Length: 207
Figure (tube, rainbow, N blue to C red):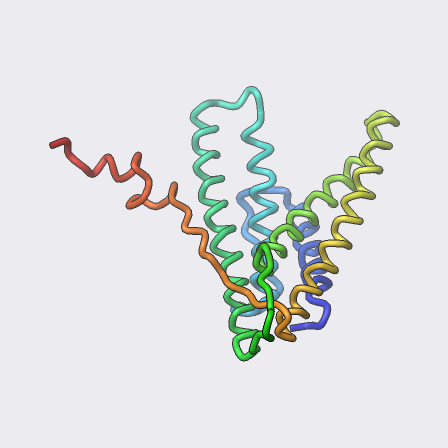
């Protein structure tokens, strides 16, 4: 793991976000420039999932959308959310393996979120920054709109800087035993046919 892990994340997230927008197609298949089973590959796919879902969310908000198409998009978004969660947990598994030999110090504390869920927010920020930059550069928008978006962009960039520093500090604390990590799998219930009563109810008969 690089010392400044957030820098690796931001570079890959920006790379992937720009790459997605060369096609701007939710059905495109990415050509991932990193080897499988590496953290770089996982980070790239993480941002790709987020980029696709960002645009699926745009599509489903079309006020004139066909209801049948909307239902298909909603189910696709649900699957995307599950894929996103699965990949975050995969990244956390990487951290768990990486820090497996670290012995926590006496008095070590746990963080409010795992490292990978913080990285998840960094991926979303890359998309927010990209799209806000697009708004700032619009030539058909009002001066007030551009000014407002420029202010928002400044805040987003500051937020990314702060979050990046916090992630690096968290990983340094874990590496040195000042903090320890635990992963609570999300255990999403709505996609599980054994836990969602709407799904398992179809397989039950009334007494």
